[in-house]
Length: 307
Image 1 (cartoon, rainbow, N blue to C red):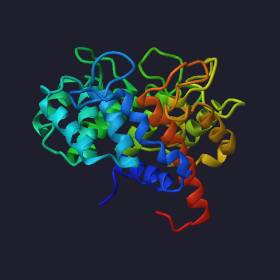
Image 2 (cartoon, rainbow, N blue to C red):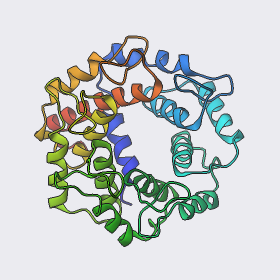
Image 3 (tube, one colour):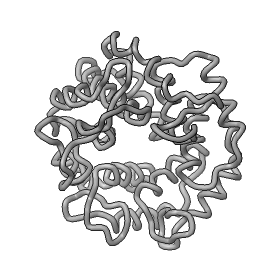
């Protein structure tokens, strides 16, 4: 059976994690602890625990190894919640449940109902109650469909909706009418097209060139061509996309590693950017994930037999 997008990404991250510096790996348990909520979930910098940040905590646990009691409490938190109401919440729960091996967290019929509710009339997927397709939400819908083990609905119309977002730069915007191509939406659109078997080598090459052009002299990637500085989200998504397309040779790898490590606060995880004063679970995952992808690339260069 062909691995899903998330299974391929998992494999790259886990392969890279094994060869990261021991000092970095050993400090991992301290990264999530400040954001643990008594309910068993995890929170962002403000507010109570929610599924979005809990998913990032589980992703870190999957790499670093979490204590059984912590993982059990996360599963109890997810199982105690009312059903999800939108694609973002649905994906967060399903991905965390996938890594925890808790398929009971979200009923398949609930997932299908949300997919149906957010399907845009012209193709792709939109915000609840809207009809304007979003590259990001269409990507999430593809991931949810893969986790369900079901065909992605209306793949042909979905591909057309995504291609309508392609810009002359080779990147993709998130919604119709937006002229600014972005790193995250480009990575999402390319991945979504690949998931439905609609990937085009010429489009992929142009998207890779667009992403490579977002790399700053400091090494990280900007969110878009007018962004003032690089950030970890854009760096992680760009690396994920470039690695998937086999295009990491187009960027300067050593400066990326230095940029990512410059945002690491020992014992406190990773910050979003140089201007960000504090860390959180989401950006800690992006920082760790970026380092894992770089290390995975080195592993593959040293041993072509690595799958």
